[in-house]
Length: 186
Image (cartoon, rainbow, N blue to C red; front, top):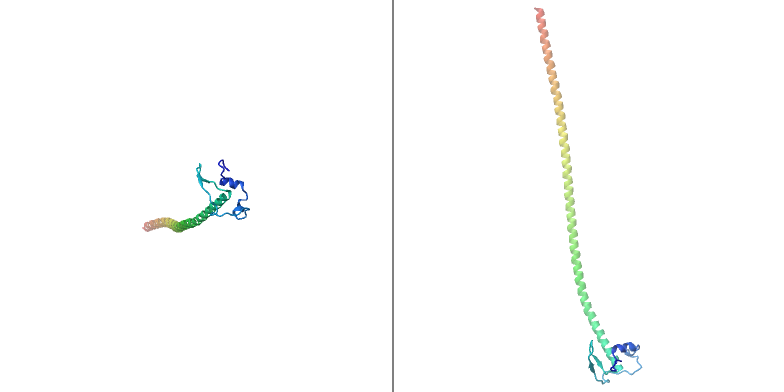
């Protein structure tokens, strides 16, 4: 009880451990309906909120019961509203997640396509380089054969010239011998 002789709700809850039993109908006192209780309500201003005064203990308990039922109903309604809001939030999140997953999947497909394209380019470049190497090898072989042919042609020319010189020498020798014979015959 406070200094004015009124019992506050918190004091009532702290002092009476059997409050649940009384509220659930297991009280030793006779139950009192709201119509049977004729009381006067005086509002006394307090720092936090106004409180009613001149209530009996039973009336206080009844008010607490009504207040807690109102809170429970309000909480139940709020839970239902929250469930609806939660479903909406869940669906929004799910939609966003699915959109994000679709974007990621598109990006993966794009990256796979890019990877395939790069692999094709790499293979084309590898083929091109291999063809260049083969062409270079063929050109080197042609050049080698050309040099060998030129070398062989040079040898043949030298041999032909040597043979030509030998023939010329032989002809000159024949000419000299013929002159010698002519001179001897003369």
